[in-house]
Image (cartoon, rainbow, N blue to C red; front, top):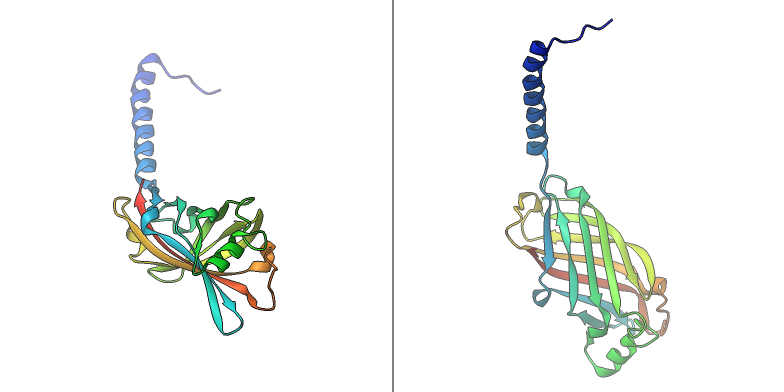
Length: 202
């Protein structure tokens, strides 16, 4: 049978237990890795899409309006949370005919689907300033997996949460996967998407 502590012994034990609990809490707090949140600096960011045309040239579109950001933990770069939304209705193109077609039902159908979204939840560093981000792209109401090849202007492992982050990224998608099957004879299937983003603490 376990002997109970006398009132005097209990008084001595309580401060010891409290001190141990406080020490453990301090260690856990010190070991916790901070997570920094950044928002897209939209006026200084852009997204471009390029597709082959007639096998000899290319057609491009730009998405100048976007929102979103990233949650970044410098000591756990594999656990990022990236979410970027493009305003499809604001897309621009090199000529009026191309612009009307891209905004129309054969391509982005911006009246029905005004937003394009990329979300990423896993990043693998491939160098000090390069990485691969796995995620998903949603366009025309269809979601497909996508991988971004990312280059940071500065190594993200040194981020402090106080300075902006500048990055560029690229991925290639098949437009047919998103229901954009028109003009297959003259317009290529593969679309190269290039992102240039500046993110600020927020």
